[in-house]
Image (cartoon, rainbow, N blue to C red; front, side):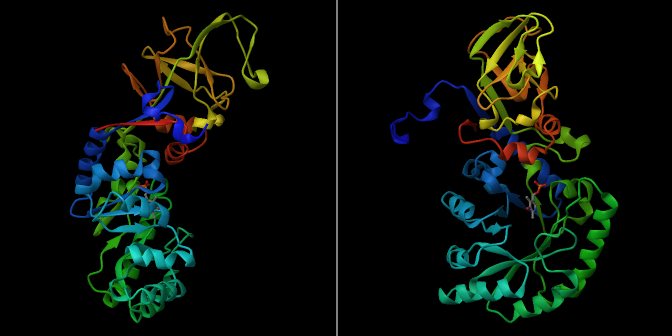
Length: 378
Ligand SMILES: *Cc1c(COP(=O)(O)O)cnc(C)c1O
């Protein structure tokens, strides 16, 4: 059967789905704007808006932000289909073969070296767009990924100035904003010193440095723009500040089967869990093929059913998990289980699920796969 002949997922009964709460997104935007003080916002919507839906998220944020940031040309093109006005910055290095297309669309690439700048200027010149073509000059003050090494930065920027390109902004990235404050402070001081030398070459060019964690922990360093991802989606990288924001994403699944497992019976692959007594279990159609991490197996993960925490038993399989509903009261086929989100007075946070599976909420979100249906509540 071809994909076309299938009904759209929204008209099928919901098995495993995500709900995106745009009221929460608007709330978080307000909070972030407050934290940012006088700085403008660069909303980071890479990786399909952190797995929340690129175009939908951007539409809700658009009026409140100055710039959008994505990873790649492909993401930028997709965003431009609905976001007609705001500048779009590319955070990842581009392929040489992408430069012409980037210049044609007027996207702003992150440039670390004179070689990249020269190639990009050449591509722009070919299109006769060179003078209006903008770049983000980025500096490596400790991330070790993109950016000019500080003691070469002046020379590179000097070279860039001679090219028919204009510098949209100058930036650096903080690798340990949420984990190492002394290191981050030293990095910020290093960047400030560097900027004193560079800024005279490009007077008035806006500066952006802080990600979510740094904006929360170093608000005096906001500069002209802050680059905010995770916090907009309602997850605080600084744990004791989670109350400030509201999670935007909830992940749910419908019970497909309820059954009794006798004492001594094994559960799931490898029989890593043996029923210690007769257990009532529910089967949920969510597995690692949906992005529910297999690494949660045997780690004490839970889902919510009837407002109660129900432990995930044994291994997470590709398409299904088995949960203990012995303490959840009456559960029937079709009931709604929450994998991430609230139900009644209980909540399972993305951070909790990420922690248990040995990863981070950023990874959990962008690991949710195309099999999961999305519903936007605007
Ligand atoms: C992804 C990314 C961000 C956003 O980080 P959050 O911690 O999600 O706020 C900011 N800057 C760069 C360069 C990034 O790659």
